[in-house]
Length: 257
Image 1 (cartoon, rainbow, N blue to C red):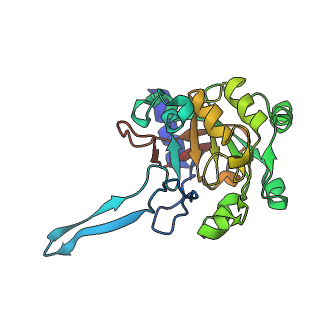
Image 2 (cartoon, one colour):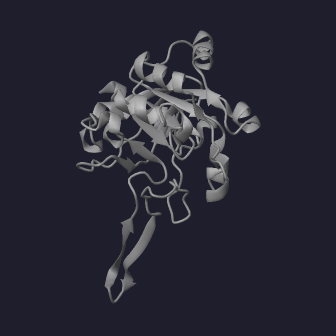
């Protein structure tokens, strides 16, 4: 128990910082917009039930409506057709929801090119400097895109050719899925794939390869600039929705200071 006691004392004393990587959730939270004829998620909505009034004099509460993949959320393997028989969000082992994390920072490249793609060479160069990707851990991909999250149009960055947001190449997505032991991928954008990934072969390779390999996704993260390249621990527990393909999630990182 001394390890857990040390952890609690470290958080209380400030030697371990808890960094919130979660975007606030309200009706203005950006959501993915698919073209017709595809179905779309609904925006988040808060509907008041009572607030210290004749509907309930001593309490305040609300109904909420939202999609599984709204705001900062967790992608379970069954979300994608390549893992149609894979885990739903309720079946993810609890021990996997607390894992080491590394941050690959390519915010400068994404600022210069919104269609920037992470390549295998970027990953291997990072490993040469920082060491291997963590076994059973998260690869958090920083692009600086979270600064746009206040505005749906700026966040999706779409024109007549579709959305333009940074992502990961087909080859790199396959590499991360098949050649590494990471538990999943976390990004700051609306989804784990690039905005132009609808035109890739295969389309949406992060979803296709990573979820197909039984790995997970975290999206619409923020504050990755407050994490070190290595050494953080991420806590990412989604709601255990039976049959669910994903869930909004409060993602926290523990960082030694």
